[in-house]
Image 1: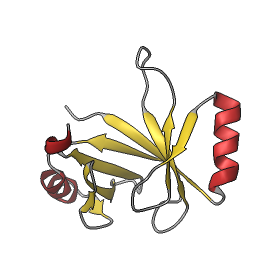
Image 2 (image 1 turned 90 degrees about the vertical axis):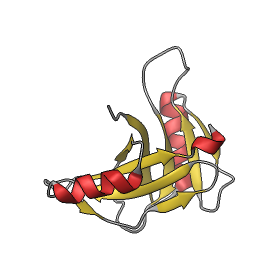
Image 3 (image 1 turned 90 degrees about the horizontal axis):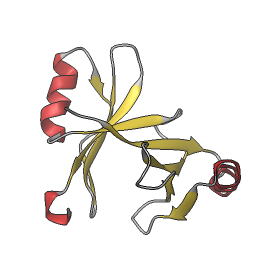
Image 4 (image 1 turned 60 degrees about the vertical axis):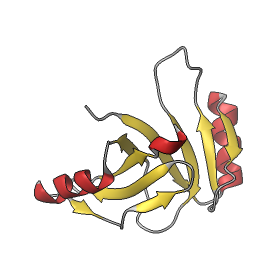
Length: 122
């Protein structure tokens, strides 16, 4: 079964948002060293339920908080999304050292991500 494994918060001012979420909730937030401006959020310890996420600059199709769901194959699930009335909003995209990702939309207009982990880095 596929689970929600990550959330993204799109923001206009990443520094302001980092300050807000770290002060309000005590989240640890660090800039990712990847190819885009992205701040990784650790929202709790491994001994409690929950997921981690990220802060990203608001642009493109992402205008609200987005949950990402882990799947064994982005290609397979892109096909399942469209076969069941949803839409794929961007091409399958590699994330160096992580895997593959895309944004989709359900039949109600809600955006979500699907992510396939790179088995060679796990």
